Length: 177
Image (cartoon, rainbow, N blue to C red; front, side, top):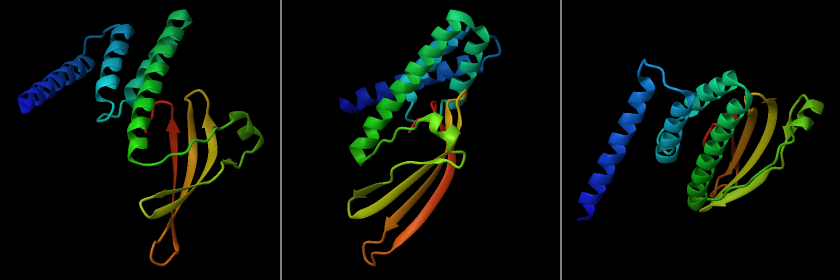
């Protein structure tokens, strides 16, 4: 009985996904309101398996072009969807492990062109201890993105020595965790 229900649910999600994606890919143009509704359906139902950032950016550009109160309303809806998807994904990630938060003051970056180091954090999961250091290098306020330098030091449980890994990347409002 349960497997039939799961199969039906899976088939419904597949049909819904195919229908929404095909409507985005059709040549005939639909209104920005219709496309935003379709993005909301995708984001709320398939955020865990799709990178929707390109669709968010395209709709934001279209909302800016439409201008006025209508454009502001559309951008507010986009922001609401992005916040909700991020919240849902953070809940799932936090169930699996630990997290920490940091606040970035964009005005501080103007006064510190080399970047703003954020307070480091140490997290232990299982018996593995990791030290995280973040530096905000640049901010693109219009695109709501930051260039981040991340350094992770992982402590070897047996030797006590640390291995360091680092990365630099851009992260923005429409990047889900």
